[in-house]
Length: 260
View 1 (tube, rainbow, N blue to C red):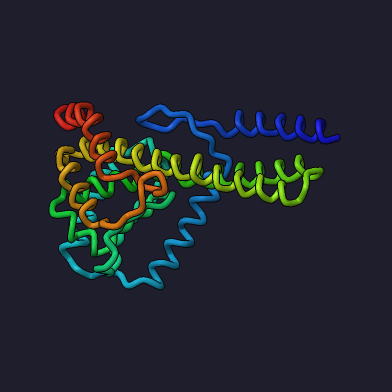
View 2 (view 1 turned 180 degrees about the vertical axis):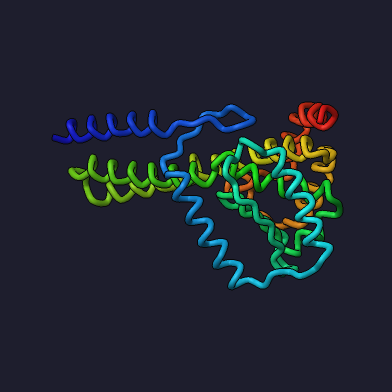
């Protein structure tokens, strides 16, 4: 019976892979997305609406005009990579948050703290392009899919080790959990960050912003993260890794900038 169960799980896994395998725009990477995109867009709209009610919105005319100006130019070049987007750009009032995010459906926000590092439109374009790239690549969907598969793997492992000594089974389950986190989940997240850097840099360049601004911007961001955990235990690549990868794609971005 255990063999039949494993065969059924394997068969279902193949079907899920075939049904959910997609291609990431701009990079061509294959990715597995098992959560319906429409469901994520609906959830994002609800969460973003709640955030606007619970978090103070900045009325600073300079910040808002800057985000709207940059955001609309990048949204234009994203085009068919994010069809049916209902774009919305919001500046949240929080000088302590040097952060930004984008959500499925075209919801984009930055915190006022980001303007401590984003000193120009080109800097902000690097930020907005990066966050929109996460949405275009459906990194959130891929992360949720990974978590679903990791949970399914844990259940399968637990079923397959029922006859083991309980102490040995607990040790094996703990090792599986640690391996899934450090060996799969964190590296994938770092890969997502680097992929968003690359896609976002291309969007910024196509929108008319000099992509070379990215190096100085991320150097300033890295200077803000003193005491960060080692890269292998972080969901973000180190500043050195990030800048090296940006320099690798820079020729392509410069070509896009010159050909716009």
